[in-house]
Structures are given as structure tokens and as C-alpha cells.
Length: 341
Ligand code: NAI
Image (cartoon, rainbow, N blue to C red; front, top):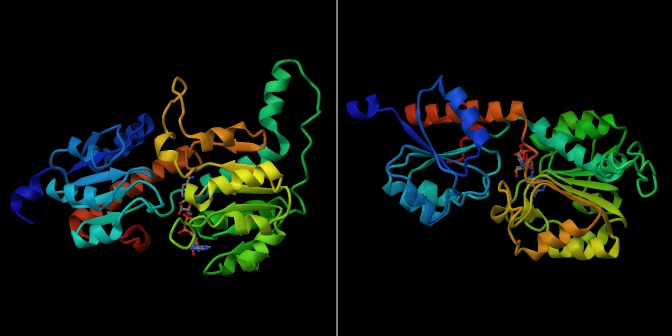
């Protein structure tokens, strides 16, 4: 590296910035001393023009980092694309490799945060605490319509038992559920805890509750579709805190109408990049699928908030800044799972 490059303070440009990103990154940047530029816009082919030259771009789940964006990042002298999240389906890794850009992520900041949110969705859908809260405030103490079921003894199917799926399996075990799991690589610790690895088909057929914790890729896209839904028990509960496109939304809407799906909890949605993380309370929403979903009384939508805990945001900031430091200094990271390219 040339001397002038060594003495310059590296610049990091953040996209899709929310107030809390700024708070946590500014707090932990005191240990790193980078120049931080925060942009509220999503990164895409148009907004990439917002940055002049910069060393690093820091992106989140709905930023679009395709070949065209990457080509423009190269022109702006970017060396590192730092994801401040675990999933990386929104980045063209092949293109990054081709242009010699490093790409890193935060593989496990707080798996418990996401797993606990999945359980919160299950409990809300089941025991209808959201309705009870509103009812009693209006002095309506009736229980009609609030009937739930015991989780104890029910069968929970988990698809993907990595960091989050594993944390979730432990939680549902604690509730006394029978736990079935499907993963390409079974986790021995979970087997010892009594989790039963079975085929995907068995998960679909035998589970009362199915929770998705696998990444989005070519093999998992629309894993919940008309065919898999037809194998499921009537009144099944589906929980998706992973990525929206694991679910074929129109097929699930049909299954909700038929009563095949009795409860749906989604923290992610295929078209979420146009909606989530923003206040649209004064807008006309043109997306009819999300509007239809939100009209069902047995559907709970949260806006990609499963990760949103104090502990997770601290860890995200620390790991992202450490990843950047390692990549700018020596072009590798000790935590191999954090380095994507
Ligand atoms: P991880 O990489 O630790 O685990 C993913 C697991 O899925 C691995 O065990 C892998 O073998 C398995 N898998 C891969 N392909 C599969 C397939 N075809 N069928 C079944 N299993 C398969 O990832 P982690 O940290 O557990 O995160 C999982 C996903 O959760 C991420 O990819 C991300 O999309 C999502 N996520 C959502 C958040 C939210 O706020 N809603 C926050 C963080 C992650």
C-alpha cells in the first residue's frame, strides 16, 4: 500500500440508514475512527451515484448489489462491501469476485434475537395477546374468540438448523414440543437434545407449526408452495423470519382462504424492499398481496424486526467495523463465515 493511502482515514458509506444504525455505528466507531457517511436511500443503480469515492459501502438486507451496482462501486474505488446482516441473497457474489471486491457479513450477531421473535409470533398468533390488549383497554373482558392451544406436546418442524434454527429448537424444546428438523447438515448437539432429523416431506406432513430458518437460495426459493402446502395438516401454523421469497405468497393466500394454513406469522415478505423500514401510513399501498395478507385475522406481519434488539445492534456494529478493519488491513478475516468473497 502507498504511504498516502496508509495515512488517509478510510471512508465508509452506509445505505438504507435508519436512526438506530447511526446511533450504534457512531458509538462503536470511536474505537475505529473511520469517516462514516450515512445515506437513507436503498443502494441501487440510481442511488449509487450519491457517493463520491469511498473505501467501503455498508449495506443491509434490501439494498440491491447487482453486477451493474458493483461496476459503479469499482469506479468509485470501493474495496469492501460490508453487509451489516447475516443473509446475503441481495449481493451478486460472482460479480464482486470478478472485480476483486471483498464482501463480508455478520454471520451470527444474536441468533437468539431472531429465534425469540419467531416464538413471540407463535405466542401472539396462538394466544391472541394483541387482541386481548386492545379488548381490555375498551373494558371488554369477554374471552370469546381468544381460544388458543397448548404448545406443550405439539410438533414443531424447523427447516434450517444453523445458528438461528438451533436457538429456536432449544426454545421450542423448552416449551415441551416435539421437534422435527430438516437441514442439509444435521446438528449433533440438537440430535443429543432430542431433535429428530427427518425428510422435508415428513416436516410438511407431521408438523403443527413450521418455522423457516434456512437461507434464500435457488434450492429454497418458494419452498412453501402449492405442492408443499397440500402435504401439510389443516390449520397448520407457518412462521417465516428468514427471507420472504421462501414463501410463494399467492399460494399461501389461497391456503389461508381454504383454512389449510390456520396461522401465518411473517417477519419478511418477498416485496418488502418497497415497504419495510419506512412509514407508509399516509400512502396508498399498491401491493395487493400484502394488503390481502394483512386483511386476514390469523396473519401477523412484522416489518423485518426479528433482529432488532439492543444486543444484536451492538454486535452488528462491532462485527461489521472489525470485518472492515481486517479486510482493509490484511484482506482477510479470522471468522471464515464472515467472509463471502
Ligand atoms: P446459518 O447459515 O447459521 O444457518 C442456515 C442453515 O440453513 C444451515 O444449517 C444450512 O445448512 C441450512 N440450509 C441451507 N440450505 C438448506 C436447504 N435447502 N434446506 C434446509 N436447510 C438448509 O444462518 P442463520 O444465521 O441461522 O440465519 C438463517 C437465515 O435467517 C438467514 O439466511 C437470513 O435470511 C435470516 N435472518 C433473518 C433475520 C431477521 O431479522 N428476520 C435476521 C438474521 C437472519
